[in-house]
Length: 265
Image (cartoon, rainbow, N blue to C red; front, side, top):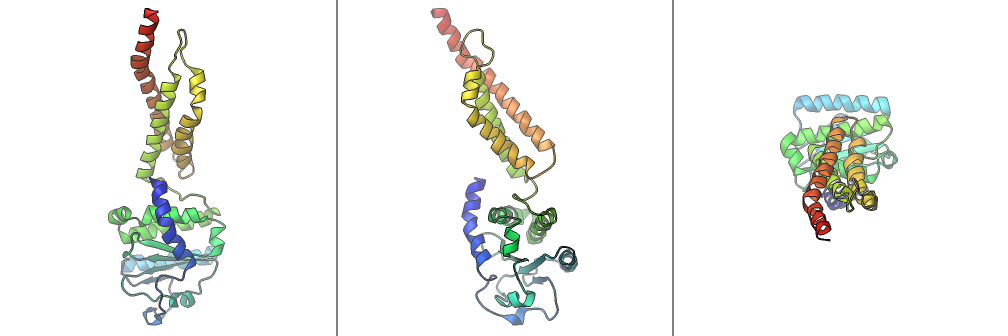
């Protein structure tokens, strides 16, 4: 489900990446008369938030050399004029927040940033913080600030392959795949012969499936996005619970039939 959503949104993100900033017109009259890294035409930020963001973005640019800029708009947009106003180059990121589309956030990404965070990273960033559910729960200001925090964190780290942090819905997905992997492993491990405790042959035969569900989809997304152990422990417990449950169910169903057939023979 998560991958499908990313695929649907990737086109809109890439269009913004390679096109000019949102708006096909050049309207410099909407630009402020003083230097600022934030143009909040849609009033998505409070005055305190805007002032704090201006200070933090200026400080981040002086410290790191990366230029992060924010434009919020609704019906009015300066369009192409922001490129010259901000001097956008390969070390620049322009975050455009516009609620008229299906996703609040769009990004104009400088080429140098792609060397540290691939295109899939920006798709995931847009998907996580710009979707309507996140904006409804945290507000447009929360979505903008959370996305910028993720960008700054990864730039300070020297790059990221995935967006840091593990949202609840994504963790629930990893937990589901872990439990499913445990169910498959549990059914596979139930013995088919007398005297066996574990059917190692079947368990190994189906290992590509349950290892992929538990390891690739249940563990990898957790360890690559957070250093917390609790989600990992929960997924491991879910895998074990699924395996034990499936083993017991197999004993009550398949095992009973095997015992009956052995007694008849």
